[in-house]
Image (cartoon, rainbow, N blue to C red; front, side, top):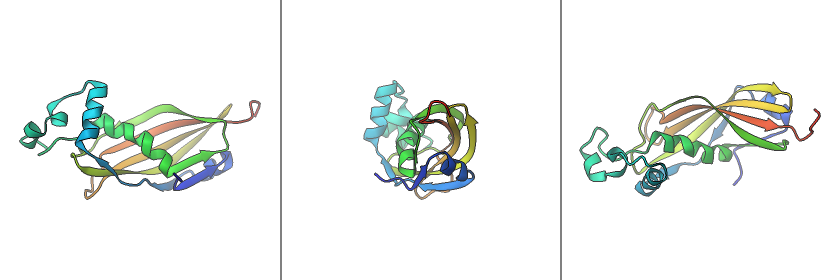
Length: 158
C-alpha cells in the first residue's frame, strides 16, 4: 500500500498545513462488516442488524454504526497520508466527531484528509487532521472528525 501523500520529516509536516492530502480508495460497507462490528461492541440495535425490520424503518435498510464509520478512518487514513522521519506516531485523540448522514448497507465510503494544524511539542509534533468520510453517490458526509496525532521525534534531545 502506497499512501497518496508522503510527508517525510518535521519540515514536510509543517509545510503541509492547510493542504488537502488526498482521498482513500472506496470501501464497501456490507452487512457482514456491520454484523461483526455489532458483535464486537454489543451494539445490536435493529437498525444495524435486522435487514427485514430495517427495510420498513426510517432509512429503508440497515445502516452502519456511526462508530464503525469512525473506526474505519483509522484503516483508511494511512492509505491517504504516510508520515515518515519520526520514531513513532500515536493516536492522541479526537477534538470533534460528527455523523451528518447514515451509511446504508452495501454503499461505499472513502475519506478525504486535510492537515489543518501542526503544534510543536518538546519531543515532536502534534497534528490535527480533518477526516471527511464520504458516501459514494451522496453529497452529505457520513462522518467528519478532527483527529489528533502525535509524531515523536527520533532524536531524544531535540
